[in-house]
Length: 366
Image (cartoon, rainbow, N blue to C red; front, side):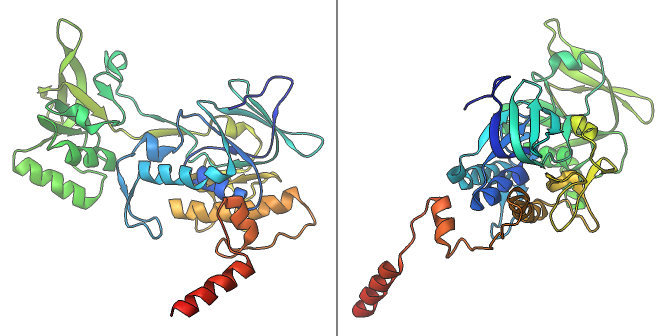
């Protein structure tokens, strides 16, 4: 994958900021219209929150797919956009977006990659996000070893004593998923009421009643380490003021995310509660040539759903095509019948003569 130099920025039709599901599908919609895209993402692999936070969590509201995991959705989107040769610049953050005299955009990242782009699509989800950390002595040193903010491999917790911190869906989902894998699971939440789905709360409380898991109301006061510096327990201070030691070889922290727009907030775009306002006909922001799709945007009736982001990406692609080629009519074509679309997708299609011969042969056999 080529990278730019200070004297030779990469030239492209569109730079997409964010390689989550909406950013990936944006590549597809642009590609159907013959537009080339580069993607930049601060994460080190495509997929956004679907990969970073819930790669194994089922998603049920993708049209025509009864159930997908976050990883399956990402893998299939990556397969779908292969014909369009999008280039990825991962582990980088876009820091600069400047309109040039030509009307095109100078885009630069924190690692020095530069682009000369005709348009920019911001598909950055909630912006750059960081998990809210466990703020007790020793937690930072054990991060990635015994203190974790996401689950990569559930089987790595087999036979371990696990303490899960938090009261939302992530905490509940992983408690339910790990109860038959771990040696013990204890959920610690600061309040008796949970924020997660009622069905998940009911399942967790049933496991508690069956003595297969435990639930404590309180907050972690400190970590208990052995002579080698490894964690062997956490001390939890309950609402009654009593401090209890809980065996813990692994701690999973799900206190939620702290979203930050980062440099996007400095690009002069109109914001509404840290989200970018857009025109719902084009999904263009307050700055011509800069578009926003997915959770990063807002408009009346906005719903933060992946399928909504896909719809936004389709309309944005047509608007970008018109923006880059003013005065030229953009025709709506269908992938089922359009030879141009078939060519761009790299799939075979029949000529009229071939179709006639096939139908003739089928009729003869019938």
